[in-house]
Image 1 (tube, rainbow, N blue to C red):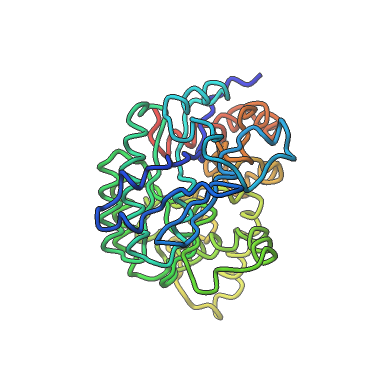
Image 2 (image 1 turned 90 degrees about the vertical axis):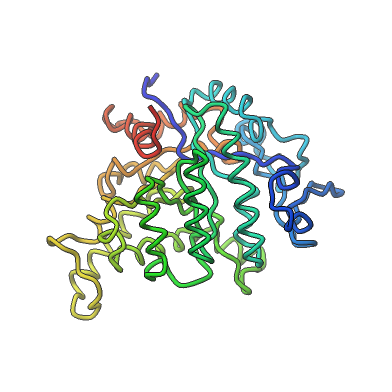
Length: 370
């Protein structure tokens, strides 16, 4: 059995049913997310009658190994594992899983990116960030929280980023597809500068597309989007690289979560090819010292994954130091409670030094684990 340290770069809380009753600005209380016990499932609503997500797969960790046919989008909050909202139960589950620490993202909170009302989105995020900071304070050496930040308004986004850092949170997640201009636009520069200066890495997590009128679709549309979902972070990262964001902010760290790894080698090759072979066609930003887009990527971008054997085989095309394993606890696709065994199988044949980096050392460095 391996003896490297496992730290999950992508785990989740499952927000308590009364979180936004307790943690939202008073003027938003009537519009805040609330859990309704419906006939077949518990359904979240926000802003009146806007459906805001279900319990379902957000809380079915381990079921894929026990009885995968029972994985469902339906479910009751009372059936959810306590580790989603109780830090003591969460740490107990870490011990069961052989994992030393969790970098924590939301579950229900991710759905807020899809709400139309920007002012409510920001209020939901503020309440969540305050609650998450208190959750992590019980075990600050094990639990590290990632704040939610709404970039619809950059001034308020920078304020919330600064407040999140003051609360002890260690990074922020922003929309993988913003409602405004692309991340190449200079209007985001204040956010990038503050993220760099506060050492708060930025994540693009799956499920964080900002609301647009055409967002709602059929089940087929949703299936297609899930299949090609890495297109959004690729667009975001390419925009930042080609526009020179990382040259202006060389210590800025931006990464993806729950998009796997295997897409990245071709993405890097494609960027380099267009940059070098079509330089006279695409006369945009040119990098100093002969650097290529792939060099910028390897210096500034990290990738969190769960189970991607092909991506591990291609790891040197991306850079071992850029790869971070995550368990996705307590979601249905989580590797809990078999994380070490699953990761050992994925890392078969990988040198021990590289195994240790991927399993935990890279995450420890990025998020300040001792």
